[in-house]
Length: 102
Image (cartoon, rainbow, N blue to C red; front, side, top):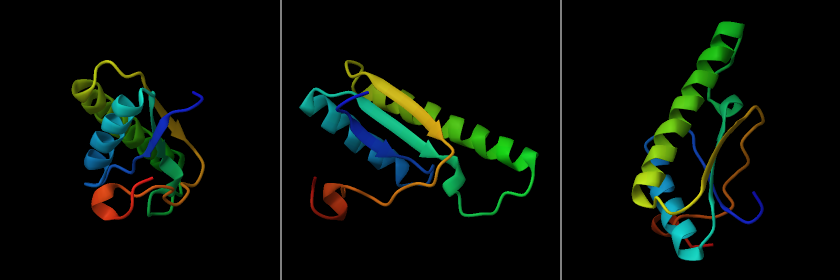
């Protein structure tokens, strides 16, 4: 996806407003929405294959719920959901409620 509104999700309570914000921005800007979850950024060490599988399942569910919410809000926008096994980067843009806009 070239130009898109990128929303990083961790599954906490902040994810829902982030998805709403991202869907609104994508609709206003006529851009696709890219939902991203970095499962390796969870705040606990992973010591087994079973734990890795569980974190990936959790990420899949976070993205499934987020994609459904975005499509319910704005069915006209393309949505890509992606899970990566890299560390999450820090925020690049603050939602208006938490600081300056992009």
